[in-house]
Length: 368
Image (tube, rainbow, N blue to C red; front, side, top):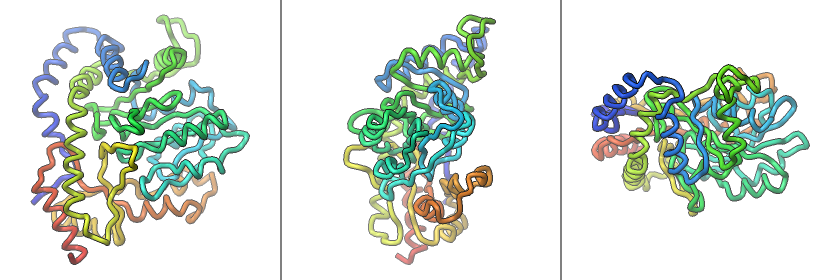
């Protein structure tokens, strides 16, 4: 049986006619940049999150960069980030010439450990940038308490947790300004690159709209040195269609995750995802931790099961950051996770029989 890591057919095929109609309307409108569909999507996305404002931008990385820039974070400033995040989180900090300060994650959730943040705060610390990794919220209650104690800004990286809750509040609504990605593989994915910023602040919202559009509020009049990062009008139209199905798709991800738990719960060789009591999980990825990870991955590949590693090299060991002079062993939890984590196929449209086949092969590998 063939089990691809990701397949969009079950999400996109039922919506194909709506997509085509949206494209035809886009084509006929003769309005291709920052039109009505961008505005409509921004309003609906903000409404979905019960937050005041959303501004669409070109990508998740741009959202992070612009959020940091609007908060006036720059040279000689320090920003606390998880030691096991995707590189985009760290790149955004570098783009504003600030210094990324790595904090280890919790073993249970794989999210940044709030108990370890305080020891990394210095006079130069300006912000905390938590990431809601794999679909589960970071512990925002404790993170916001630390931020308040030290008068720090908070920027959430919500790219992997659209629709997830912490203490009955959606991710992407805790921070002063928050960034997300609509890369195609996300729970809410465009059909190309796209991103957005959410905030409760009208001032930040107005600045985002200006900075994303060459620093201009009025055409040809530039108030600041801005940037070109606008959510594409067509992508906004497609995201509007898909947003209506996000909760349904997240529920399906949870149902499929439950099938993995049922079939793998008695395997002592692997560690399954755990969800904190006051969190919900939207399973952007279903990530297990296991010994002999690479060997298991090869075994599954031979049985036509695709898996991925999120992420094989922690940021502090990437060549791009060798100038920070970190060595192997400096962040042992992030390094252990990089050596042991394996993402199994999970997406709307994955069948029960495919999950059962994946689980059978994992059990066979471990001799169960």
